[in-house]
Image (cartoon, rainbow, N blue to C red; front, top):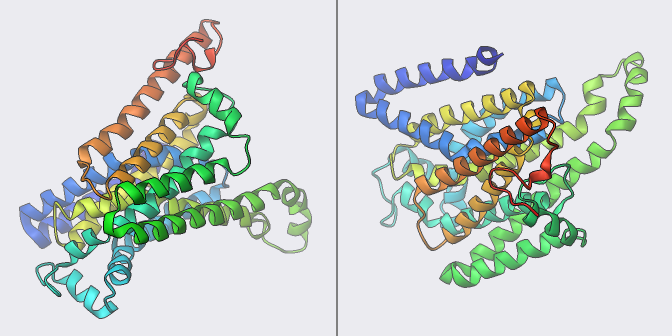
Length: 369
């Protein structure tokens, strides 16, 4: 299973690094390798969260996520999306943006492509920050089968019964961020943050609506098959919107990696190749977690990933004004997931010894009540 799932990742890594060496020499080889590692370290928690969504999709859509989804992630989010952001925020025509991107040392009105992208950081951070914050809030406020940090999660589950409470919290957070971190970019931050919120509510809401009809659609599958209709089409509406949700989620996770990459290289093709290799591993890891049933075996992993998402959302908001080192972002995600994994292992051992699930109270970082 491991080789079958990661085979394409290994093949693309080898091909990409060979291409980097031939095109840019030893220096380019090293840059692409570093960028790949950067993307993996910053997005590891993304794989765990993706897996919680992907396991609700049938094998067909899982393959779509690993194939078409990768093309969108690599070329759409790591190449085309930054071009669009620069064009929209700097009010540049497409020809100028592409010219700047292809000629990394070239300037327009005194700024390079990388500097224009850096200038767009307030809008990028606000959009991604609010989107990720909503993911964290909706998770932390909902009732869960297991609680990891029970002393935090149980009271918040009760508060979360208030309708649209996560949206209110996200809007208040956006207002605070625009007031304390945005400065002259306050209007831009507010607009981008609201767009991030609308995007989350729209895509996630549509997915939920169609997913709620899956049971009814399943009952119709046999009749649809006899009528000559595709089962995938009949039951695929929910999967399609879940797929779109995953793509937007991936975009939100990729923002910090794309912007940070320009501190390592100003060549857009090196950045796309390096981040693309890393994105491929994240996709493969997501599918591996689903097929291996890892989330079912280690029940606190999902919690750890969502706490990492919450931390990343805060980092993006604070990063509107202050630079947060990439190593901090990466280590926070790894730390939360590592602690959640350790807690899950301890829980499984207690279960095996007949000690009960403990509901997180005796977990590695939980607390007794």
